[in-house]
Image 1 (tube, rainbow, N blue to C red):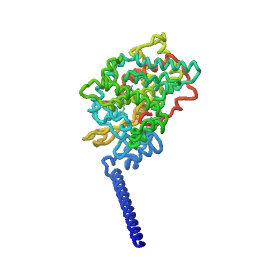
Image 2: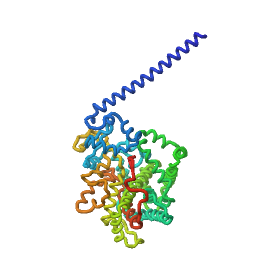
Image 3: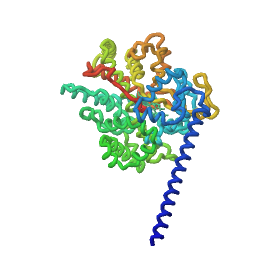
Image 4: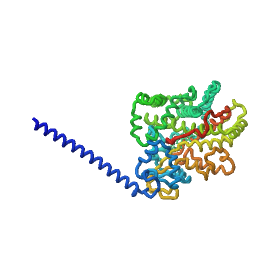
Amino acid sequence: MIHFIMHDLSSLIELKTCQLNLWSSILLAALVVEASQVIYNVHFHPLARYPGPKLAAASLWWQIWIEVVTGQSLSLKLVELHGKYGDIVRIGPNELHFARPSAYHEIYHQKSRWSKDMKLYHIFARKLSTLTVPDYATAKKRRDITAPLFSRKNVIEMQHLVQRSIDETCTNIHTHITNGRPLNLLYSFRCCAVDVVFSICFATPLNASSSPGFQSPFVHAMHSAIPVVPLYKHFPIIQKIMTLCPPSIAVYLKPELKGLVHVHEMVMKQVRELKSNPGALTSYPYRTIYHELLSDKDNVPSDMELRDEAFLFVNAGTDSASDALFHGAIRVIHNSDICATLQKELDTAWPRIKDVPRLEELEKLPYLTAIIKESLRFSRGVVQPMTRVVPEGGAQISGKYIPGGTVVGMSNIFVHWNEGIFPDHLMFKPERWMGPEAEALNEWLVSFSKGPRSCLGINLGWCELYLGFANFFRRYDCRLINITPADVTWRDCYLP
Ligand code: HEM
């Protein structure tokens, strides 16, 4: 008996030792592979001759350290790195970042057919949308479908919808004023912008602009979801798990997401109704994205494609426009001379408050136009380098040959903060956009990006900014309470 037990015990020990040996061999093999990869990346990779932190060249963990562990802004870190290493910096084993402004036009140029780098663009849970489709050809087809909705002609026709959301925002602002309560400017602009997207794109009201205190649960949810972007960028698995998580559990884990879940259900309901009964579109008061997306009977998008496209427009159209309004407005309010000059121009062009001018008239106002451009320059838009993949055969960027397959990008702050182009770049100076030399400056306003993947909603964005600034400063005299523009800090999470 004892003999048998001893025998079993020794086989068990042998098995355990064997398992242990197996695990240590696997671990050792993994370490050898990783170490060889690091040696290859640093010394033999085609990008090995480009300067930059050795750790960044060695492994992706350098970016994870910067963005996820220490919570720094990649774009701000890049300012420091370019100061040290020059115009081109290697910021990943296969990634280069550029600082010379002319490189912006070389990467995001109109003739470029370069793909988006999915390491960045998978951060969007909505994979099937125009923004997240990586290759040029597929994206072009997708863009062409909804482009008529965002053409200048259509935006001019539909501007009353933008004005309607602004009027609703102003009614809510009025309630604040009569109750003597201060206004959360960022949230009021966010609510207005999201309502514009809902009315133009879906012909469905969200009524965020009327929410008490502009505390729309949806806007709140969107805002609280942004800081998680760097984590999703580097650990897509976490995002996948969160996407698969049933809404009730997601809300239980993060109650702020309630508004997002509600809107998700709202969008899905509209999508399912239209898929089962496309004829219902004839009862809509005007054309929406669904009219365009469902127009090709031979190529009907899936429910998921429709949902992803819908969410793209909400995401793309909300923060960008409202951030520009916010950053511009606080700077205008902060500087009484700028504010007075703007209000004088608006009072002259818009003498009777009830006769609201049209976009076409506002576009002729030079100071308002200059305010908008300077606000766009200050608001940063998509601040993270929008990464693209250099096609086979390579390309010339910043005077250097860049091999095919390299991921390249440039944050817009390297253009908008360039002293040579924008002297005193940290000062809000609308005048820089006026006068004889100002025309040449337009090429350096890159908030909407450039090239075939630049902003599809640019005309709508401009419309919101013209009507938004004009209405706000024609109707109200404001002052900042317990805050100056310098107090507004930001962190790069794709958007600021
Ligand atoms: C001031 C307002 C806006 C700014 C500054 C802005 C900026 C941008 C930027 C920089 C991109 C390129 C993103 C990238 O490649 O990573 C982009 C793309 C896009 N924007 Fe805007 N945007 C604004 C408003 C809007 C609006 C109102 C809409 C529509 C409702 C919109 C729809 C889109 C779409 C569909 C794309 C994807 C284009 C593509 O990938 O081919 N944007 N926007």
